[in-house]
Image (tube, rainbow, N blue to C red):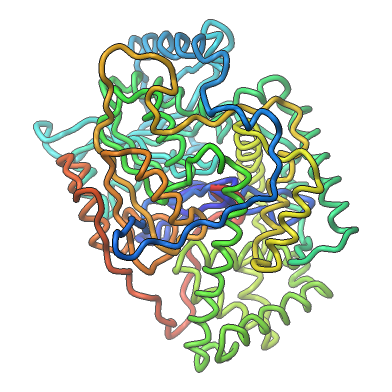
Length: 607
C-alpha cells in the first residue's frame, strides 16, 4: 500500500500499504518522515503502503444509521495452503516471547544515552538522539543485535504535568519518524508537547537502523519510465522479469537477515524501545501501516498499553494481509481520483481542463500520451506522471498544484510538471531503502499468490473498474510472488488469547481510532474492522473527506478528540463524527509545492 505525510508509507496498499506521496503534514506542509510511493514503474518497484502519513489526516467511524459501503470481496484468489490454517503466532513464538522479555529487561537496565544528533539526521538542539539495541532474531536474543536510531525532545510544560514519552510511527513499512520531535514546536501539537516527550525512531531496516537495500539507488530512481493503465502481454513479461530480478537483489544484498524484517519484529522492537525509555506502559501514535503494527503490539503486549492513537487505519483482518488489502486500495484510489477530477471540473474557469470529470480525465490522458512519446525534461514519463498525481489521492494539498502543472503542460510549459514529478537524485538512496523495507516486511508477513496467472487475472479484472492505480500497485508488490522465504501467518489482531495462555484476566485500555470516509490509502472499512476487533476502542470519523492522516491537520474537531484522549485518557464514546475539512480552493497564484518524497509511500500498494 501507499501512504502519505506525518505519515509514511503504507505498503501493501500502496497499503499502506503506498509510499507515494505524502509524507507532508497538511498542517505544516513539511514532511515528518521520508515518503514512499507506489510502484509505478515496472523497472523500479515502489512501495505501496498501508500508508504512511504525518499527523494530519482524517478518520472514519461506523454509523448505525448510515453504514459505510462494504469492502469488495475478492473471490478469485487461491491462497497457498498455509493460509487456510487459523491465524496464530508462528511456531517459534514461545522462544521469541522469552527473547523479547529478556531484551526488554536489558534495555530497561541500559536505557538510552541521548546526546547531540549526528549530522546525518539533520536535527538541531534541543532535539537529542540515541540508540537502542534489539535482537535481529528474538528467538535467539543472545545472538546478533542491531541498533535502532531514536530521537527525542523533552516536554515543554512543568514537570508536574508531564506524562512521559509519546512514540510516533508514520507508517510504511519503510518510513522513519526521526523528525517527529520537530513537530513539538507546531501550533497543532503544542498542548500535547507540553505534556509529553516527543520520541521518533527509525524502525529496523530504515535509515541508519541496520538499513536494507535491494538494488542500487541509481537503478531504483531510473527515469523516465512507463506506466500503462492496461499493459500489454509484453509489458507484463517485463514486469515479472523485473520483480524476479528485484528479489534476487534483496537476497544478494541482505542475506539471511532478510527473514527478520517483519511486522511481528517491529512490534517486539517497540516493546524494547518502551523499556529503554524507562516507560512502564507505552503511549503511541501510529499512522497508516503504523496502525497495523501498533495493533499487533497491543495484541501481544496488552498490559503494556497506556494510550494508543491509530490514525488512518489499515484493515488488520488476517485474510486481508497483504494481497487483498492492496486490491481494496487500488479500488479506493479510483474513487479518490474521481474526487479530484470533479473538483478540477468545478473550477474549469481557472484550470481549463474540462467542465466534467470525464473531460478532465481526457486532458490527463492527452498528457500521458504526449509523455509516452516524449518525456518532459528527459525525466518525466508516464510512470512519473502517475506517481505524482497519485498524491492527489493522499492529500488535498496537492489538488491545486497538480491541476496547475497539468494545465501548464498542456499549454506548452512543462516546467511545473517537471518540478512536481521529476525524481530528485538526492532522495534516491532513502527512497530505495524505504522500498526495500516495504517489500521485505510485506512479503515476509503473510502468504501471497505464487502464480502470476492469479495476479494477472485479478488485476486485469480490477483495472477495468479502477485503471488509475491497479497496475502500479502490482508493480510495487509483485516481488512477493517470487519471495524465496517462507511467509509468516498474520496475527489475529484483537484476539488476546491468540498469542498463547495468559495468567489472569487481560483487557486492553481504550484506544482511539481516526479515519476519513474517503481515504484511499487505507479505506474506511479497515477502520471499522479494527473498531470491531477492539471492543473498548473509539472511532472518530471525518465525514466526506479523504486526506490520509488526520492528526494535526485543519480539522479542529479531530484534533480536539486526540488532544483530550492523549492528555486525559477520555474517549468520545464508542464513535464520534466530525464534519469534513473545507474543500481546497484554487489559489490566486501558484504556491510552493508541499514537501514530500518522490518515492513510494504506504504506505505502497498495501495498507
